Image 1 (cartoon, rainbow, N blue to C red):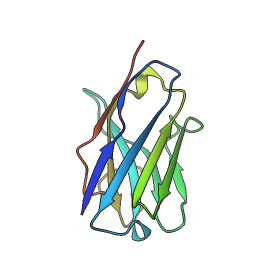
Image 2: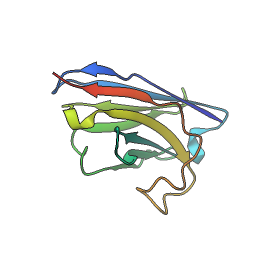
Image 3: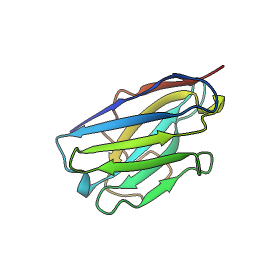
Image 4: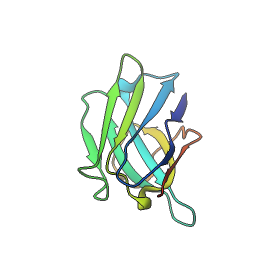
Amino acid sequence: VQLQASGGGLVQPGESLRLSCAASGFNLDYYYIAWFRQAPGREREAVSCIRGSNGATYYADSVKGRFTISRDNTKNTVYLQMNSLKPEDTAVYYCAITTTLQNWPKSQDFRSWGQGTQVTVSS
């Protein structure tokens, strides 16, 4: 089981980025796939989650209305469209999977963390 996050970069406030999380070794249909982020000196925090089977979505309050999570099961890939980016969105973004959201938005049930992709929002 592997997750490969990509799509990060340096953007100005108000701009957009789309992150991708490519999964291999398992079928998205049977998992929840989430994005987390961690900024320097801060704890890892949940950003968004999607249920692979039916596309149900979950968002942190800080990104509601700005970020959209989606999945393409034919490509075994989950996306995070990030619009209206703010400097406080700067972090390393990771994707991970779980079979239960019992403890969402905590990360304790998630596994197979990818290597992360850096998002920097700065003018």
